[in-house]
Image (cartoon, rainbow, N blue to C red; front, side, top):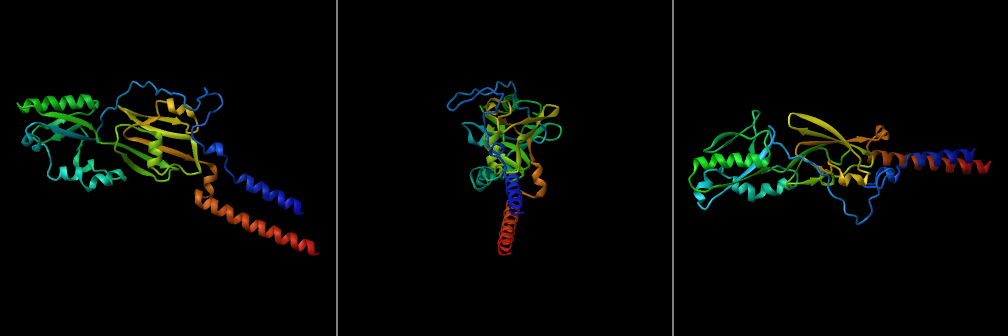
Length: 272
């Protein structure tokens, strides 16, 4: 009887463990070409440039030898917000460009002081910059130079992330691991081999699946995230028992009670 109880105790403890293979990133998986340490891995050759879409926010700067010209394109207080406290908030998950940038409306237009409405949706950053540059050249005889870029990379995390919600990375390029780090990484109950990227394209959306276990991800076209990506990380089936913290605490408590009960049972059996 005692040996049977101990057998079931060991079986329960083993079944509650999660293999390292299910939580380790960038493994050399069977069937894939071996990628060793210190090996150079070229990025995927993806012939794709981000296309501006409605509701994107773009950051536009103007430069000229005549400061009075550029002041005509700055909203009151925007310079202070760029260089002041809101910048720190943006790095921590805030969004300073919501206040200082230009939002593309539903029809694809931005509205600039003096220049009026300019349609830049369905264009690349470079094409949009050139279009704004042409408009400003028609307005001023003096040289005024334009810099236009997407105001950070916005993405949304759902599912088994440490922190779900919309995030902003103030960089021109960010990897899937940058996104994981900014989102509190994934918890122990996440299916790291089933991370879905819902990506917007010009005129539609596609769903892509990636495997965080696989080193081949480094050469994947989905290694870099893009603006407006939605990342969904599936939970393991054991997630039905609760979140990772509650599950670990529950198993530990259950194991303690079971071990104590078996010990008492064994002592009582030995006295009779």
